[in-house]
Amino acid sequence: MRNQLKTAALLALLSGLLIAISHWLIGGTGGVIVGIVIAAVTNLLSWYQSDKIALAAYQAQPVSPAEAPSLYRMVERLCERANLPMPAIYIVPTPAANAFATGRDPEHAAVCVTEGILNLLSEEELEGVLGHELTHVANRDTLTQAVAATVAGAISFLAQLASYGLWFATPSRDQRSGPNPLGMLLTVLLAPVAATVIQLAISRTREFAADAGSARLTGNPRALASALQRLEANARQLPINGNPAFEPLLIMNSFSGEFLSSLFSSHPSTEARIQQLLKLEQELPHQRVQRFAGGSLR
Image (cartoon, rainbow, N blue to C red):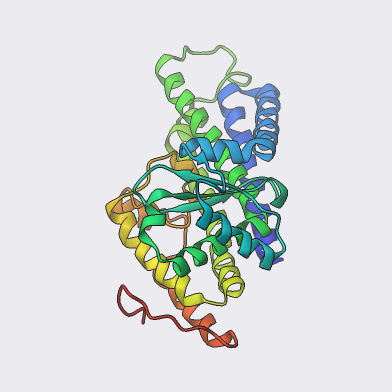
């Protein structure tokens, strides 16, 4: 419950930032109204189109049971355990290894994996990853993350418009009703950073819960721990291409830049996630202990 309240507060803060930016750019009551309308439309669009927006961002392609029978069987088995409806399955044609889930609710969910992750992970490791994504679906994190990504994208777009406005704006006789020059400058310099920090804070509140959910769903925390270590190594060499606003949807940071990835991380550290999973391994009864092919996790 505390995580849900924290997430709701962060989403409200993100929408409030969008409204404030509109006020700075347009000025007066009209700017506030425009900001409220943009926030409402953005959130409504995210509610109904979140799956399509995220899937398009990574050029994901739908696959049928005939095209990916093993993947379908694995997802079906996990959905039965979790009492979830079967989601749509997508594959991103890239050698980068990653995965994500999206959709406004479990009845309209989609699970997406890359060709790279199918080639990289063992069956048990992939099962752990899919369990993580299905936990996001069950907790409705997919909608929360998609809304945050869309609102953050709108803020970045307005910041870009503000940068043009600083170059081409003409002085206004009525500064009270027109754009606020200081507000425009703050929008250009700080708004995208602030939106990103809030969005990533939302993402980090959900990842540990999804890892724990996968561990309980599969009964094999070590398999997901092994998968996370492999995925981190792969992401450093082959970051996935896509809109950075949707990176929090991914199971692993893309590591497009070492400094920025550590400063603005959409996920807890992989080491912290692994340690939490190994702790869960000791707590779960009748735990299946798997040998880690890539080296010791401890």
